[in-house]
Structure formats: structure tokens, C-alpha cells
Length: 406
Image 1 (cartoon, helix red, strand yellow):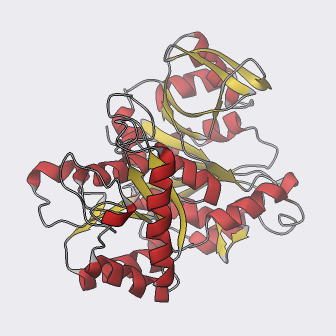
Image 2 (image 1 turned 180 degrees about the horizontal axis):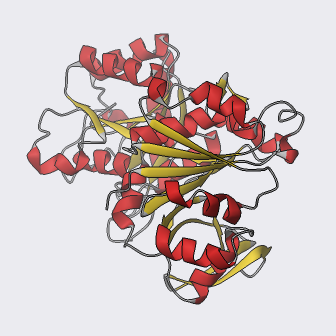
């Protein structure tokens, strides 16, 4: 399913963000010297959206002067303006002639590491398609893979919230708003849930917002270029013991010298690292967690002596049949570290030597560097994930620096 148009609600005053919004519309509040709205538009452009419709109101001239027709941002931008007091439903209804038959509607104060392509692949041509996150109290009650109830006000018995990234079919939405157009779009949620004309996508990673001053400070940190690189362990830092074998003694650690050289060079450029590793040897009882920790500590100490800074080490101890959420290629360890370090995974590289590492990067919405020259047509489903498939250390370093500088 292809959707070209994104519609962004930009009309409110942003009272909870005062005094930053006293003379500036909320979407134009600067986060690390760039308007927040520019981060959103950059993500939309990256994932293939061709047209953006901004539904503006409060101090709209500042938005129009900055973005214009979008030419300077390589995307088509249109505007529809209305008074500040218009409800979201009214704002959408009055812009109906500019809406395409299907479109993505966003709020202008939330951002997350959302894989839009995966979202669109899961969209099943429903009237409305939500992006939900597990949170209590919530607005949605989800059970057995279905939305059972919706409440405009948060309810301690409801287990999901909506993140403000929603796909709509135009016709049923406008038909509803003809009757109730000067109301919140949330009343359409109630109608679609009641009539079971909905579908949803669950976002498991963190999200951030500039809806108030406290959240604004968290978002500033989230959107900083942290220069953190994620690393596989065996086959990337240390030599792999071989297929079906495990590193079970700290006396048998052997390092991949050219990769250590790469990490040293990147460390001089202020990069830091987090190790993410599958270690089924624990579940297979070849080693216990204490012994594994001893091995990891010895590796980290060695790297520290080389002035390579390892921020953290994550490992999955489970068997591949355990169906856990942390074993790569599942992204559970990535989500855990993104929460701990307030990390935007879409701005991070994961380096590994196994195709499952690249699958994990795709599932976590990271970019991957594949330390292997065997990438071929059977891996085309990863083409948007893998920055480079190579053992050429100089070329890899160049790609890394380019990625983090953009």
C-alpha cells in the first residue's frame, strides 16, 4: 500500500509549552537549533512521502515563511489555515478538498523512531489505522489482537494509547465530519471502534513529545546526535568460535584486529559503543550468567585499555525455541537500550557479521553495516537497512561518519 500524502495538525497555541510559544507556533519551537516540525518533515521525506499538507492556525506566517512551498526541502508543501479555536475535526473537514483518498495524519508535537514502510505494509485498507503503544492508563482497550473499547479520557482499565500517527480513508471520515465537523477527531475514533472498522499497529519503542516543558527537555536529548554505535560481539569484536559453538572461557578470547582498529579510530572521533549479543550458551547450560559476565568484563576491560568506550552490554541468554522478545533478530534488546539512553534508533547504526544482525537492525528501525561481502539478491528485503556490506574497514568508517553527520 502506497500513501503519498501526510497531513500535519499545526493550528494550536501550545499553552503547556509557554513561554516558548508566546511568539512562536509550537511546531516551530527550536529543538537543538532546528524547528521541531523540520524533524518530522525530514522523517516523512526519508520514507517516501511526496506531499505534505499543513493545517495551520496560531502564528501561521512563521511556518509559511520558513517552509514555503517545500522546494528547499525537496518535498511539496501545501497549507490550509483556520482560526486557533477550531477543533481538529473542523480543521480537517474544512481542508477536505486538499485531502487525498488516503492520508497519514500526524500531530505536530510527537516524534518517534517509526518505520513508516513497515506501518504501510501492515495497513489493510481499513477506514482508520492507528499507531498504538502499551500504556496504562490508556484510551484503548485491546484484547486478543482487537480493539474492544475506546475512551476519550484516559482510563486505568484501558491498556493502550494512540500516538498521533494515524492513516485515514478520506470518504468515511468526511462523511462523519459532515455531521460533527466542529468537534475533536477523537469522536471519529469512538465511531470506528464501535463499528469495528479499524485496525492498528503497535509501536514498542519509546516516543517523545514537546507537548510541555518537561517533555521538551527530554526531546532535546532524544534528538541530539549521540554518536552511539551498536555492536554485535562474536564475529564482530571477537573471533567467532564457529557455527554451533560458543565462547565459554575468558581464556579463549581472540580479537578481530582490523575491527578493533576501526573501533579505535571511531573512538578518536568521540564515538561510543553498546554491545548486543545472543548467548544461547546460557540456556544450553554450557556456561552460567556469572561466567558470561566474567567474559564480557574481560572484553570490556581490553577495549577500555584501547580507549574504546563501551557504554553497556546487552545479551539474550534464552534458547532459540523460547520465543523471547530479546533474541536477535527480534528487537527487544534494542528497545531496552533506547529507553535507558533516550536513543532515537532510526539515527543509529548496528554493526554485525550475521544476516540475523541485519534483520534485527531492520526490526528495530536502525541502519545496519554488514561485515560480510556475501550480501546478495536473496537479502533484498534488507536493502533499505544495510548501509554497506563490506570488510573494507576504511570504507565502513567513511559510511559511518557520513551517516552520523547527516
